[in-house]
Length: 387
Image (cartoon, rainbow, N blue to C red; front, top):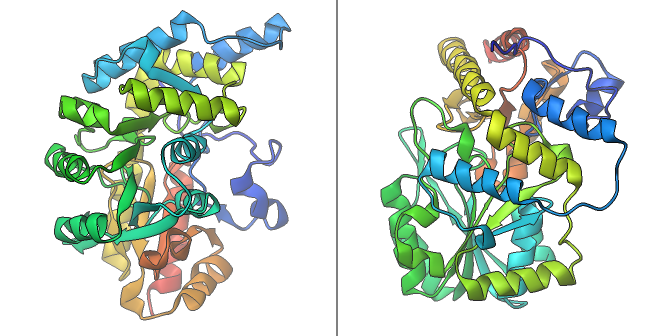
């Protein structure tokens, strides 16, 4: 089947957060929040419509078929053998991070993240009264790297109890290699650190990059890890509210289940279960077409901006999000915002939303029709060409 990524739905009618400012001023192009302006895969749409036609919106349980869909997806795409009892459904990855931290750390415990970061993660850590430890990534030849010497120093000196790792990394789209993940795992084993891995962007690898699921690296790592993922980012299903926590260690799993129940987060919307199952059983052809489309968009933006402006582009190794570096212009964040938001009428995510490491940056969403990508680049070139 051929999939059409040149069209979008009328997102003003559905109260899409990304389009909220467009409702006030139609001149804006929304390029921020990490959902797509493409319609979902027709195979998933059909499964959801079939459910709606039943007229049954009562309580539902997680069927064996959705567990099998997750098991098969893990095996086929990541060579990751997962048992049914290891799969726990929660309404989202961030809620799962909250559950894990509540269950397995204590108030005032230190929790480490890499920066720049996805904002809801440090927010969650601090709302739970844990101490936030920031490990800043190092940019080497336009690509983020982990300073492992500094990482180990922070783990020991700040008595870190948990490390929340994004793989692929948000906002940069960096895919951590198997060797890097092995070093992280060995450090966490050595220093008795719980590792919570957010893998929500894992299915959106680009340019031949391969995602390595953490539980496939070393059997020992399963004792200290909670791996989180979802079909919602990959297949544009955020509103259906479903994700998976895969926990091989029975002790960690029991604590997580207990906290999930205490939080009354043990129920997942039926729409989320149906959408997830349809995505994992019927959505792969759409996903392969989407990846090619995103690569086309990323290639165009990188070539256009690097040729016609001084904006430095970090092409994503995964995800439909692109990290833009405006530091060559020497403008502060307020002045930059005035340029791309007020003058160019572009709605990026501000770099400072990802921490101080995001100063003089912005995150650009590539998941919209190509003609809008071209228009956005035209506006950026016009705005920044002569500065």
